[in-house]
Length: 329
Image 1 (tube, rainbow, N blue to C red):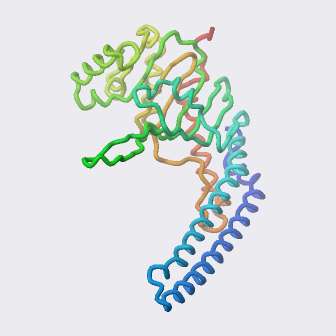
Image 2: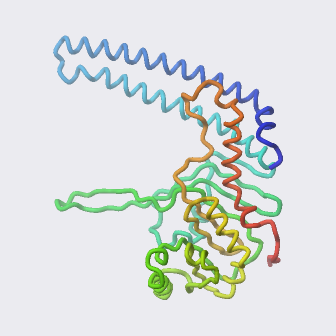
Image 3: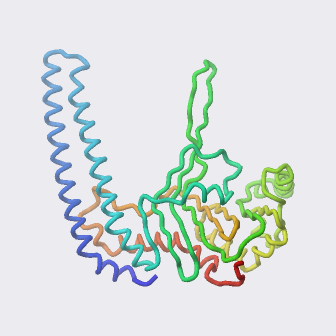
């Protein structure tokens, strides 16, 4: 990180003030539209009620509500886009000059599928992402974005009526980074739920799953007890898996999991490491449209976005990706 948050705040202050003035004006206009919608809709509904129009007397109030909701949605989205375009693009540059930010960009679906981190889940019927950050940190090429992938589940009740549900496969931060080594095989590091619940029997189930072809290659037993408790490793090349997962890297993965406080997934494929960090938090969003005046000018607000960037990009340092111990062919 080249620019500290307080310096970024000073340099961004003219833009932030302008944005805050625009937001204040938009909030004032929204309040006026809301007031007039309620007054006009209420009066028309009252007139219709006096003429005994029945349920039709509620129509003007319903239209007023639609106008209010549509106006809010439009102005809140405009505020969100203005913030991301005029503030986040600059904050990412302040955080590291080699990084680019694209609010509407995302990790490509083909890269998500290449990672094999969710290869046992159904193919996503919905694939949505945003807040793509990409570039080179020191020696490491990195891409990350928020992703939300879902599949559609169709069921029928006892009367044959069709019902649809959308099931989340993954929601969180998805990271793709150069590991500077071309892998011959595929190595997956997945959360170990079976062994946590079932102990040795759970490990037997994992081994059976690999033998049945549900996982690539074989179950790889690691020597670190804490790592074995939290993760299960499958690989098409046992020797390469142990070569990749050195005691040092295992310790770093454990520390990174503790930092994220989430059941992270990793895979080592081709020459990249893929990491999925599940979270329900929506990163890099502006303060509320109705936030107190000059919220963007508070030092804590800018520091909050730097902390989100620090968290999202911590993988480079946490996994020591800039240290080159191999030579890529």
